[in-house]
Image (cartoon, rainbow, N blue to C red; front, side, top):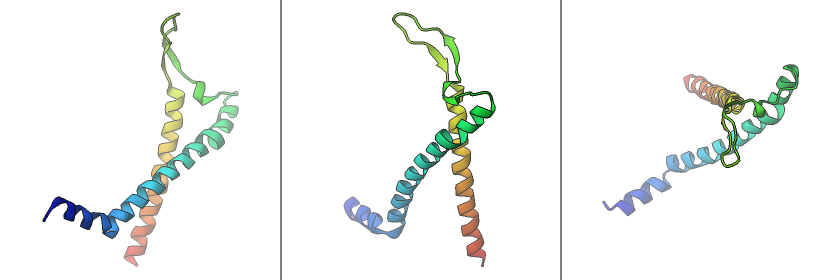
Length: 105
């Protein structure tokens, strides 16, 4: 069987199409969750912590010079990304849990 024929059979199967749709929806969902965290969740948390903007939280390892930019450890951005991940992971967990419950019934 030629590679082109094998690829054609793979590409038109439902599993490959479902996977492609899942990837596109997942990418869109990730953008929504990132916006939720950055624009909705983190501002009130920052306000409660004394007006902190998590995007600005960083540790300067080397100060900027006239020719070189500063070297910083951006732990605030990491906190935002970590919360993004936790929300996405929890949402996926809930979907898988629901699907497993439906399969058992």
